[in-house]
Length: 117
Image (cartoon, rainbow, N blue to C red):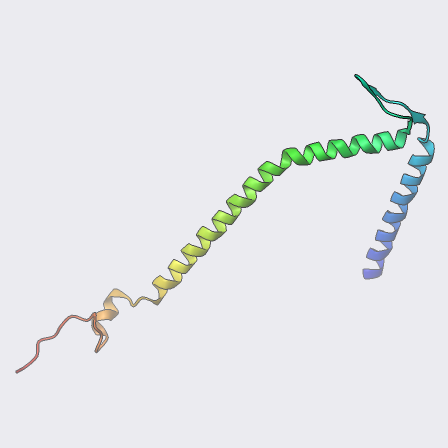
């Protein structure tokens, strides 16, 4: 099974490498991009597409950072609250039961008994 997994990983890597190789060679034509008052020097189409994809990925990630940060901070607050509640439960488990307090001899919380003089 391990060999099959490694073979699959090598095949996927080889397919991605071959695809990238073909993409760069088939889209090697140089273009100049005009954007309002700015014009790029001639660059390959694959480089322009890669740059556009990178800018889109950065913009998308910048929009997702705030919600991800909020959810991780909320999860941290919930974990801390849960740990506090679990600690309280463990402390309550160590307390004696109400009926067993009176039965325990020599306990300071036990009801005082009458002493014979």
